[in-house]
Amino acid sequence: MNAQQQKQLQDIDRLAENMYTSSDHHKREEARQILEGLTTDMKYIDQCSIILQYSTNVYSLMTAATSLRSLVSTFWNSFTSQQSITLSQQILEFIFTKGINV
Image (cartoon, rainbow, N blue to C red; front, side):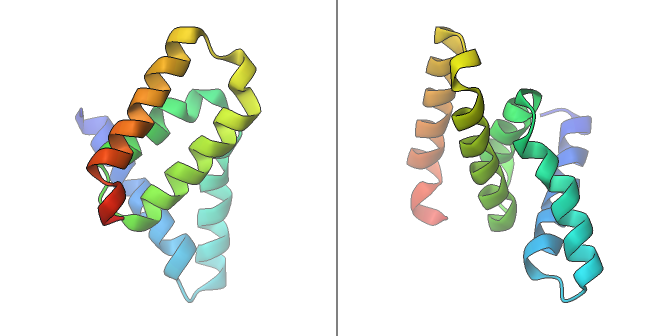
C-alpha cells in the first residue's frame, strides 16, 4: 500500500468511526455524506477492496463491505468475467482471513 492509500485509509477509518460512534450529530451526518459516495460509483470498488484488505477498524470494514455489496448489486452486469472472478477471490480471501475476527 502506498502513502496516499494509507492516508486515505486513515481518513476513512476516522470518518467511519465518526459516523457510527460520534455523539455530535453534525459529525455523524458529515461523515455519512462523505462515505455515502463509496456506494454510488464503480470507481470505488478498488478502494472498498483496499479497506477490506488493510483496515482493522470494524466501522471501516462494515462501511466497505456494505458499500461493496451495494456496488456489486448495482453494477454486476457491467463487470467483465475477469473482474467478477477477481472480486469473488478478494471477498473470499477477506472472509477466510478476517471474517472470524470481525
